[in-house]
Length: 538
Image 1 (tube, rainbow, N blue to C red):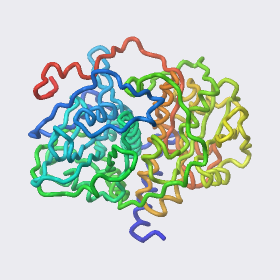
Image 2 (cartoon, helix red, strand yellow):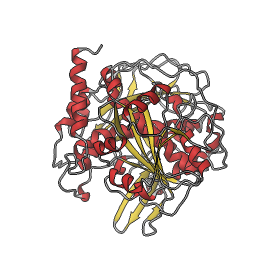
Image 3 (cartoon, one colour):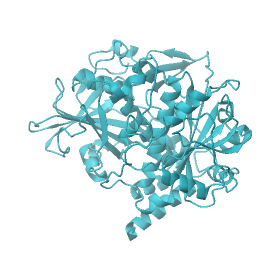
Image 4 (spheres, rainbow, N blue to C red):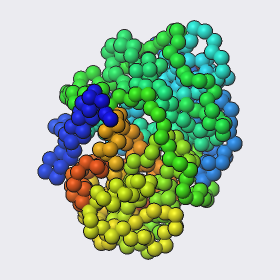
């Protein structure tokens, strides 16, 4: 039974969700105009923090993307930690068009705005002093924020994720909190795949609540953020280098030590304020969480093939801007992508210790041998019952001929749904010109009743699904892109949803991307050669 405090928090969260919906006749509240020359700085720095430049990968990983689940675990070394951070959160390239220059990263982000910040808490890593570090992706270096007074016993490596909501709110207004949580899910997926290149596992530390995480990461040090935007604590992840999945040390703790650094101001002249975001952030703060994973997998292990190095595929991932409307994908490739979304106890889903609550609805346009129309993938048996009750009663729920027998994919409706997909996704052509689009439906009301923080978890799970599709599509020679702009209630109306048992949280689309040859692609870290002793950006 929810407490009265939780009931109020749930009311705040649900009110925010309704308020931040896009509608066919109006969009959620946002800025009236954008000055791109005044965009917030995409890179947080801590002035006065000692800096440690990390080595870059000099060659592609020997492990292929297809073999990520069977890599011999590597020990914690500075080189290994550097590879992990580079492939998870580092730069993938710079882009130039005329006078404009912008960075692309291995982890995707809504609008390429990157509200997610990462901190490394390391103990017992050779050649790296114990302590807390902020990862500055622009230069692939660590800024030391804290070192303990006393020597630590044992070893352990943790990654803390935070959000700077203003980076998204600057462009997207009140809807920004949604996108920040999606990006945490994207980052979680990026970290899990990068860990796989070293044979490492990733475990979410649910025993560290919001207040403790803020203390561990120094987010509660108001003086360090006196002239800068604050950061919201999100997740603490433990890196496990062996197959045992046992902790190296029991749990990180806030200890006496020395702190360094002042956070930089990202936007000295913000023009808008969105107080509902802060209110909802406060209402949805994470408590200590108890994992509730599923029983053993009811479906066979995946078999994958391919010879592309994992690092090559991870770094070439892009968010497609346009799709070739003539490309038709093979049915086997479509089934492979759908199968990747089932919550197995293997990479990347072994990093998600909660019952799956997100179920994809596919708008299939161009899949060879598969009729166009709507398809559903219930990811749990309980989820299938929720979908069958809540969706349109006239949907057929037919088994899909030619699909693997274990795949719970069902055809709901046959017919051309390209214009529907385009309209629902804020009239964006990418939703119709692709091979298929997806609406990620969340079991919504039931989880929230047990805690308002589930709002964050639902979006994070959706973001993890998106990151899985990004990389799996790349492995098949296709491309994906996330779609955060869609008309929420219009999606529900098309699907027959009449209450809040289900909500659409994220859209995605996969096809063959068309490249804009006017835009130049530059190496990600060539600028480091200009000032290698500090890693400072020229």
